[in-house]
Image 1 (cartoon, helix red, strand yellow):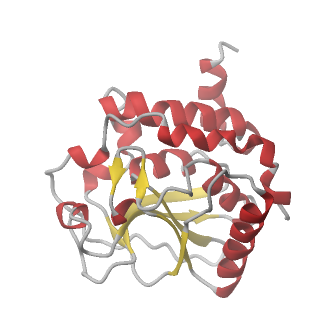
Image 2 (cartoon, one colour):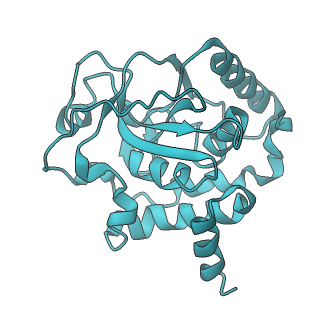
Image 3 (cartoon, rainbow, N blue to C red):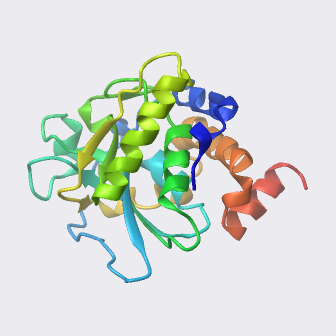
Length: 232
């Protein structure tokens, strides 16, 4: 399903990524690590891997999409096996904070996931999203097959050529080679910690805007939340 450069007039949404620069997800650590690789392999599902800065934000958005079955926060793209959050936070492991998204392609397509990816962070800032700085926060698409690679590259070129952003897109498009689940406390962090400062001041406004822009693609629970926020 072609996105026609994603209805470029709506891309102002990505400016939210730079609005809050006073808090960083890297400020929170300690807790135990779950070393399991949560890659689900079922014939009726497919997998996508995206990094849009802090994985708390990435997970909170993609898990609300209808057709998305499971979202796991973790680390990908580096050379150290089973890295800890503290190791990745040094920016020396090569890993990026990312989310592995298992989805039903009969309900939501990879093209649609790419649309959400481009619109929910700033792909023009190198190794940075807001106050989260370092290679671990790079904008990145880890492609699992040649079709995903071709689509990611196609839309990156199309968006750059269209002038949708006022700066060049620096999103890395890298082959998927590994994924390590983050520590247990990182999973569903936004849902479990809505009162935490980073969640209230950074993630909540992004999720609220996302739910308005993509209201026709939300799961029923997310639609109910979006309607409640609007007083409907």
